[in-house]
Image (cartoon, rainbow, N blue to C red; front, side, top):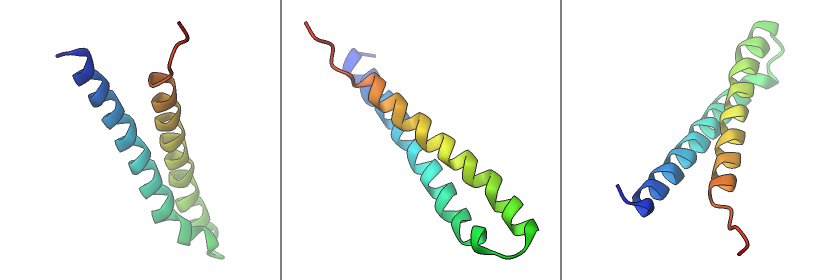
Length: 70
């Protein structure tokens, strides 16, 4: 693989990770407004997991595409 192909693949993986995290957070968000403790716990852990996925994808995308000064 060329450097350009590897760059596109890593960018795609980061974006897929961000989309998966966003989907997880949006899917669990309505359950966080429930009055039942079981719903809060059941939706809280996936919401935190989704935010971790989104954050690491964003950080990976940012670090990988950083331009170095010459």
